[in-house]
Length: 558
Image (cartoon, rainbow, N blue to C red; front, side, top):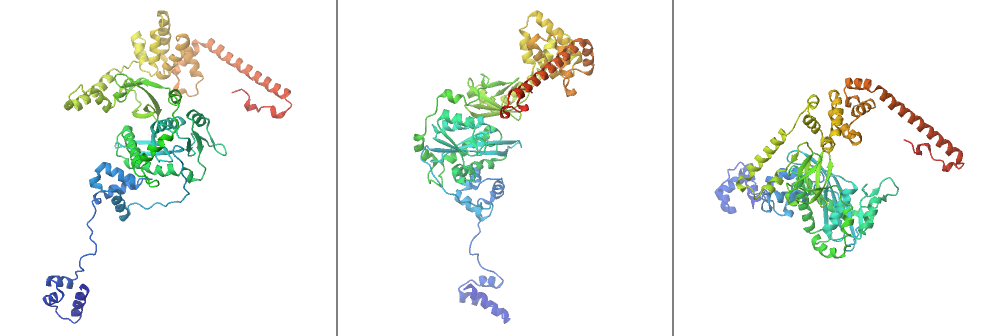
């Protein structure tokens, strides 16, 4: 009908006839004003309405998140749901359709591979999601690794955040996964990670460490076949879900936040319906856990966890070096372990990372949330924030006032000044604790010997570390001579213990002792070379079979 109206109006225009809108309206059962609109170019209502989507307001944020390398649509969806809620984001199918319609992310090419399955409790697959760079809200970048352990039958997963990729980290992650599963699978299939595979051998072989662990935990360790993705397809497929964590770039504050995010991701992985099995991994795991092997005794498990344990004090602090660092107060009285990397102290409890501190020289380092938990119940909730901030600021100020700066010249004036001078060094605690237990006579020798060297100090830290070294043997009776020997044999003069004036002074004072010392070294070298030649001659004369003659570089000489 509309086309007929347009056609009749076009003919009238060609014939230069003025249209009668009212008559045309009656003819086609339309309002005359509508006929006039068609004559003026109106095309009618569009076939489809473009109302827009409630996701349009988030389009830029969704696009930015999808641009993060190796992220996934499901990962972005999970992030948006947690941030804005289901009511504002909607269902995953609608979210995915929105991305497809707006072409916000290109489709990945899918490579085919054969499929295989394992029975309950028969196998789990292990792999690293390595070197994930993720930045917090303050702009600090963390490089983390995620150990992924997944049971082949149920697809039930365990994720372990780690800052390093040593065998200790693999062992800790595996033990934590076994504890989570409530047992040990019969077979562990590893991707060719260097911590469990000797990469220098052809073909690759398992390391002695993983072989020993497999015997202790009664599982069979196997390596994936090279260029055979089907052998590790389950863990590779599930690894895509770990990429959900990349979406949280600039969305967290601390390593503890990152841990909580990973736990949430792990829980979502284990509850959501798996596309291959069409069942929730949690539902299948309910059956599979009955087929797992029992864990070994606690004594065996403990041999794989770090032996460097630190007890948490009643103040929720552990001592590391000369400083104390806080943990969650719920761990008071418990033992934790630590790991040091890139000047950061990573603290673990039962093999799981619980907090992170920057190493510094402050005697006490409280995290605000740890201190807040300590104060709970002791301060009115309304005043909590102000009291905590005030206490922490006061603590820092008081600790700052405890810093004592004593020069070498001042250190010579009294025993107290000398102790204060030594206390400035990171080695000072050891020296002072041992000095406190010396006899009166030994203390006098110590002070006299140290005072002899103090006017000529070039590097204080080197000097105090040398006090510690000398104190172990002779209470520093010969500290001046020891420092002189150390400096004359040092290649880098900038780190000399003594000034040039000091080296000249003590070289003259200990001229005879220096001569005897170097003469003795020369004699030892001559005897060493003579013994070496005798052994070489004996080998060449006594062994006619050349296959039995060791190479010269295999002889027991440096």
